[in-house]
Length: 84
Image (cartoon, rainbow, N blue to C red; front, side, top):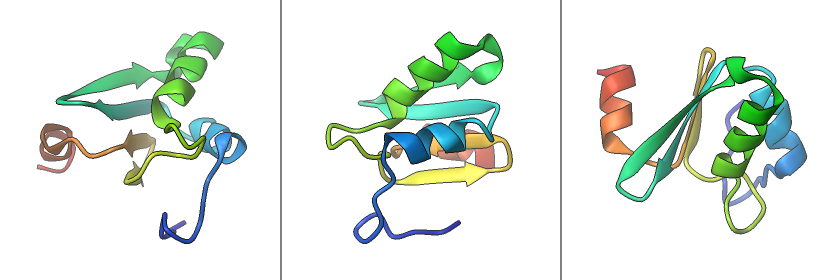
């Protein structure tokens, strides 16, 4: 799915659905990125959801899903690491 974040808002329920389809999440937090492996069960999924939902209650932009990996927010080093 491709969506323009200005026109389409993905809320908590939609973000939770996306998390069920991925195995790892990278979320930009300031000048660093946080990596969460979703193999850790419900607590890992709750942590990932907390990281990818912005102050508006929607999925943070930009958000990119590549296979089983979700990247929320922009962190250049993470993009370089994953996409070289």
